[in-house]
Image (cartoon, rainbow, N blue to C red; front, side):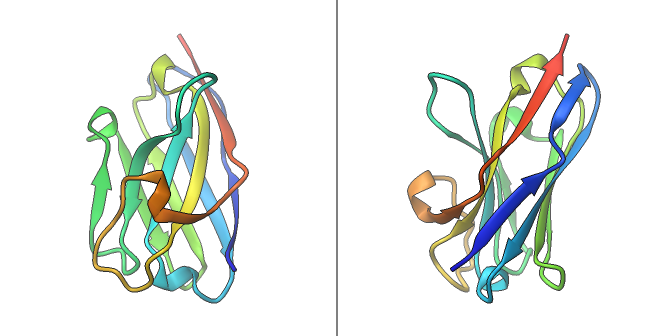
Length: 127
């Protein structure tokens, strides 16, 4: 069992930055790939960024490449999403998720590949 708690969301002006953090509990966190997704009302949850269990590889949605950076610290059971150059279209609830497959060398971009989810944190970017 893995429990995830996101923090760091808030209101920011366009062009600003936020750093989201996800604190995990559970012994298997460090063995799982992790991801960040986001969702707006009436839309499906969409992939933002992901990282392998070791942190050796990362992946990003095209719309965040060069602006967002995912990282993890397995000694502290945390994963972070640094978001720069935020735009109003980045407004959403952001979710942290823990992948199903332990020790996989891959990261995952589909929601069905994730087993545990946090409650989400709201990010609002004003123009």
